[in-house]
Image 1 (tube, rainbow, N blue to C red):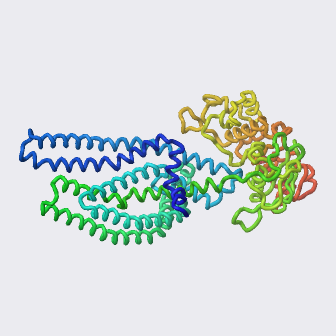
Image 2: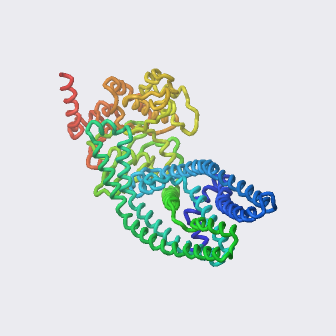
Length: 610
């Protein structure tokens, strides 16, 4: 790789390039700070050295003499420079906060864009992608990637300060300044390589680190708080975190030992270099071959030369922060959606007009040893409702994700009015599918926003909103909220209100119906009554035909009182559709559907007699 190409590929270059592209003003301010960081401390030391050098003349001639005036002038200059150096701290704090906030926003935006780019969801289940995502976010490190820019600027300022200190020493003995400069370059290169190797080893342990953080999230979060306490899982969490963390750190121990050995060897070279410098200055002073001011200046410059190549905690922090840059870039590049195939880009509006057909569809999850769906054939007739029943693990939820374009069949194809689904813009098709998933999203936003979801950036249609709320059985619960539709559905915010599982399910159903009213042509209901109480479930049955009227709908439920109202019912077993027909037809056939219905009906009848 050519030097210029290597520079452009460097994480350091990419971090500064990102800051320049998003906020050139902040980068300019950071560069000014870098120059000040390199110049001002050395200027203070030089001024103080010259001030000390003027003292003997004042002792001989008095403060009122020319020598006294020189001393006072040099004191003023040194004081001004020192005051400027004191301002560096507050200025750095403000600038660091601004740059960190800007870079954090940019990086998080890039991550959101990257993980949201694929139309499907398979990448969010890929351990390799999750490892890179955790690294890019800095989740597994004590250092946030957003701090890389200012840490790098500060480091460059330190290098500049060290180089200038070597230059000042070279003014006394050229070989002394040059020798210390070269020594630090030779020492720093392998030290930095070892630090990078250690961090690379640490990054390879992302998976056990993610597992350790899983225990932390269980301990800190509210989701598992009740079970943690009821089952006494506190010690288990502590042990699990400790074991996974130790497992992650173990591979890095070898690199740490190598780093420590090299530091020990480097110490010998550094001591020899500074010993030579000290002897040279001491000999010159003993022979009166160097003025007092120059001696003081050179002595104070010696510690400053450490910044040319000394290894500090800031260096390790910077390398750790920069290690996230390749992961962020690779996620952005790898998750970029592929272009539409030839003939793609067909209009989605108004589909399906005739049918949606699953033709020989098979699907196998990555790493699995068997197909969830195998050679499945099914037709969803436009404008009619189809229910899917089957045992747990039969592939019903997988079928929904294939219908919504969230996954791609391993074999076979999905056709919409005879056209392969991949020939439609997948985002447009997904907006054409309104779904109530079994694990629907509960947004800590207003009731209005939970239903409308800001579709296409349009303002909510109040009449439609009220209509779908009535159809979903949510009108009453919205009316009881303190601020109606403007109530935040989370008690973690002032004026917010928590909802029960059944109330949330009605909000989710209203969300899907609102999307249908705004143009979605397919309605998917996955266990739509799972969290409803008996009365609410009965009301849902009464509204079922109204809810699904005129919409191509797919209903998945274990409750036969729901599915029996569908136009057609399909039994999914062994990855295939084994029975298909109306409720009455399937009962007369006496197959698996009839058996499952009879068992469930008998259970309800038995409970009713109690």
